[in-house]
Amino acid sequence: MTLAHLILAAELASLFFSRAYGSSSSFPENNPELGAYQNEGKCFPLQDTYYIMYRNYKEDPLFGGEAKCIIIAETGPFVDGSGTFQVQYGGNNTVNVKATLLSSPGYSVQNVIQIQSIDVPQIIFNITSVYTDCRRCKVFRHSYIENGLGCTLWKTEASLNEDLACCEFVYDLVCGTSRKYQVYDNCKEKI
Image (cartoon, rainbow, N blue to C red; front, side, top):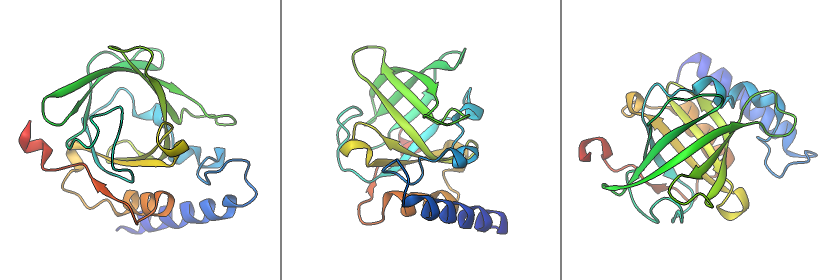
């Protein structure tokens, strides 16, 4: 871990814990002061494909249950804060979605991605950024898992073989260490 990553991790930990008590949100990272670390708006259009590495819940009812190899790729232009994507899971299964960037109350950045199934438009949900490094990794909370307690860690294809201690630290700090269900399973070689 570089010195810059250590400093960032210390700043995030300090902000998480200093705001955890007395905050109106049940999640300490839901804090507009952390917006610089949660700005999804600066990541689009995507520059790379994303892979979900692990999550803190066993089964995802919207993306393949317990399927491995969940891959997210942009399939169309990103215009006016939204675009189309393909989510591949379990090898050959795909879901086409529209993603729209939103802001949580009080935020000046877009820290929420609203996902709507193109194939089944009544399926709509949010994922909220806990931490975003557009070129390397992201940590999200999923609104539809255990009242928002569901978390995932995503990596870009370019960073699959990198040790991303900062992202992993944020995930462990916010999402816990006791339940980690591995989703990535040499997926790049299997597609």
